[in-house]
Image (cartoon, rainbow, N blue to C red; front, side, top):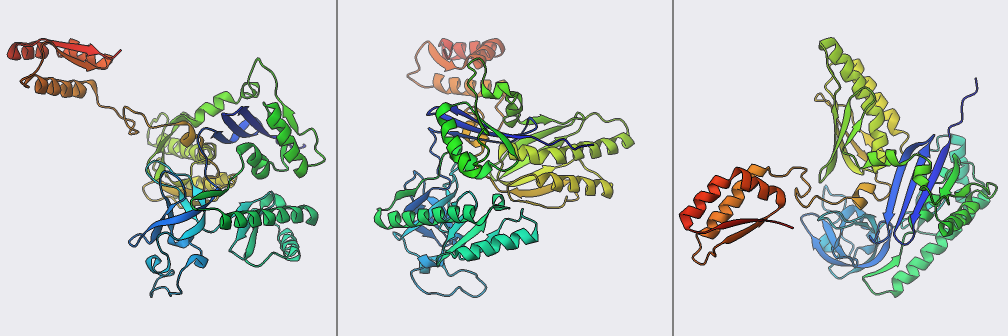
Length: 486
């Protein structure tokens, strides 16, 4: 029996001048989702001519003025030795010399944004620049030749290595060969490498001419990056719902796959959106949900903390000890297969801690660990997964590939300030009574005293604390008016 070929599709949805969405789906199931809002300045990948604002000796890091409202953070291992002002050896037991002795405030350097600024943290920067192309990533300042680990065939790795050596990189340049380079001919690879070398020369020239702080290289928008970074051989169709963008995408795609002229298609139906046409809306709503249902009745619960993403697994119905063991194993297995997919959808970066349901059977533990590591292989991002602890916790680290849809589209609740909890009505009412009591005791307290609160609290005070309000009126001989916000 012939194995059915799996169909992978790319969808690019554009709201002109406002937003670009990118979806990669396999057999109708969303695998990756990225969104870029054009009014929010995206800086990841940008290169700036910047100045050192100050050096923190305790952290052994520099804070960099690159033109943003908050200084960027540059740690010691992200500083290229070419920027050292003096030839000082590292202290005994250290890998790097003391920053305060080799760098100075006001010093100029070229920096690239590795991570966007988040919350109270400034952007994470590096001086080890990189320029991604279709087939290569050019790395000025690092004379390296790396080949993607996902190219596993040794003969192909050797072929690509020999091609790069024949192309002869300039002094001080290195490259990383990307996965899509597999089976590509020398002409294609040479063209991409020459483009990247010209780009680096332009950036270097601009970096020498501009005054700091200034932008010297801006990363391309999501529509361009979709073709450069995500369009692979297994993508059968690219759907775009904006004619101008579709023309650009067609132009980019023709350079990559010149024989597949009908790959890019335009959605122009005014009666339904591109996402509605391909039944993607409901799947997308899961990305923004805290809870995700599992097939057997269990549930994944995602909570983003300051430094990590916590994933809790809630069990289904339990009946007896034997049933509990089976239920725990089945739910954990489903969770292990689903969590990597959810992390890809949400593009969660950094540390992730998964709290599995406790299992005492070592075979079950091994099966769940194996399922998690297998599911992670489908992820393009670099991941590192630890073994399960005796408490049922698994720690993993995931590289963020783009700008997380959650970080772009969500904000902290102004009521709970991001905690997910708000004070109950009784507590709020008591605080209001304390404030009213304080105001009544003032010598110049007016009568009536108008006290303004939100509607829900106003109703609670008038229904549940009316007696207390009457007593305060009698005691201070003042009328109290509870006024709801309009």
